[in-house]
Length: 170
Image (cartoon, rainbow, N blue to C red; front, top):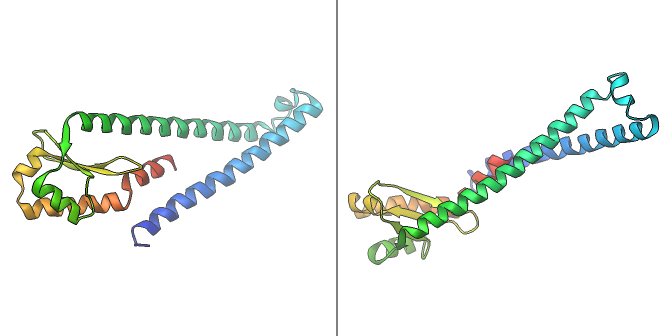
């Protein structure tokens, strides 16, 4: 495993472990509160204030879970919109660009977007692809284009769009 993946896996693993511990704790608190309410009635919640912090912790965990789910759906929707926008304004790489892309392991994964601004980016979470603008290709030397594709190939191999999503959700 390369050195770039270890810190990422450690970070996401740590956050997910902490979240699992917090979720289990909140579940236990909610269960405890539910048992007390079943035994003594709902008045027990506000009569001595003992269960207020536990209830607030459970509510905070529920709110963060809902926010995380919303963020996941929003990211998925944004990814689909980006792919549709690229698909509508692009064409597959051809000629020399296709050969350079294949040398970097990007065969059939590079599209050229007719755009006046120079850019290149990796997109797509499950099957990452690379978009390169026509302007970038027109303004760079062949060696520079190869360097850009090598850089983007590293993002594709590392599944960086998916990692970015996981980091945001964590």
